[in-house]
Length: 168
Image (tube, rainbow, N blue to C red):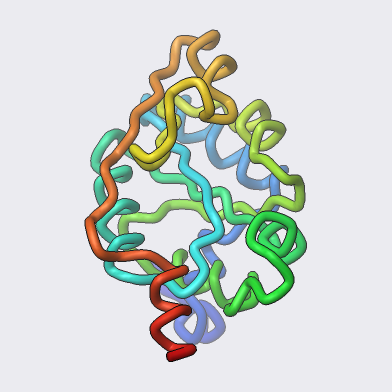
């Protein structure tokens, strides 16, 4: 078993939070070993049970789970001026702490399309609330022989509902 440095023991999730270049290199290595790569993305603000269930189910589809994480600016564009609640470093650190997450990659763009094209996953996963035609990257992933999978969300879990409950 490899020995972890003191810094890795304090913050082991740093071992799975990658920039695009390192993520691409790591995924290339994994594919050379025959691993199937699963990619999903989202804001993952105020992580809750529904997020955990969704990410775990996504991880079961292949060998390595890569999570594209919207930057703070990207979340604000998508969700409004009061979001995100948790800054990107915190969100990335929490997601990276899950044993079933193999990589977290932050993206600044409004959509993860460029990241998907760089990483070339075998599976693209989104929540079942998306219509198949609306899934960004669907056409690209299918064109390289990959599959698009929609996972049902757990009922009753929503970041927006949590925020509303806190405001009351």
